[in-house]
Length: 347
Image (cartoon, rainbow, N blue to C red; front, top):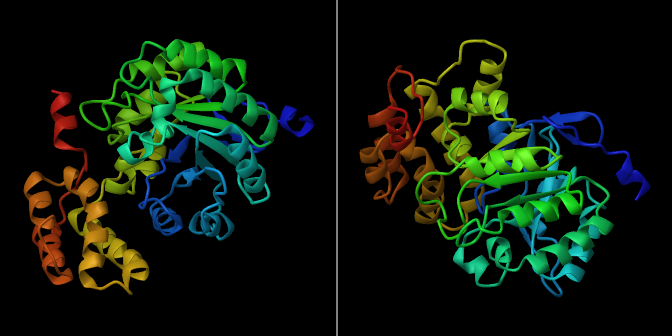
């Protein structure tokens, strides 16, 4: 544990090792935020660090080969944190020891995934129903992990009645940093994220706290960093929709004018996404490729318009898809790329 004692996280920033400060992270999103997307995001400024898709841990499991390749071939110049999801302490310990033989800057425990297929296995957000097991997992990981150990969580499963108890566990087992998403597991991604839970964690924990949920407006992101004692922000859907967002936040923090993309710049981004996904789906045919792109368009469309989203969800060929893109985005007007409902919430 001697190496661990040299890593001292500081309030207001996150450190991986002792030299790399991190405030802006890309959230992990299954089948979306892989190394190919990290590389694409770097063309637009990139995050300060990247978190892998979760590695499912169970008896006999191994590190996912694609995720291992992402870690080994990461050439973004940014740290990579490996996220794990599992319910068995012994197997979690086994996997994190293997992960620490790879160039990872940290280990992140998933206590927040709301997907039904995950929660049915008592993993991810479902673990919030069993804090005794969470404690056993944290105790095991705290002994096994020598890089920074973090947790991504929600305030609770059905409700947030046990959130303070959860925060006490994080404090007792000296978690290095915590990310809080402001919805319960049962809420999934419905409704609006309640950032009061992020603020509560920031007030009660000595380690840095990252906020997560509904981050689309760079000016609001700057306010959260400056006024609400957040050690950092973790952005997922907002970064898929707006790959410029991390650079926009940095511009605002420096007091510079925020540069918003034009429709044509957004169009260029969509064609880059098309090229990126083609490398993965080229052997499965055109329809599979189009469906893969729709995973990204489901997030992107919310910042362009409901009619755009309606149209792209119904295309079946690349030509149809590209035609919709050009009809909507072949212009020089600036785009804020903030979902309509979030804009309305400001009025």
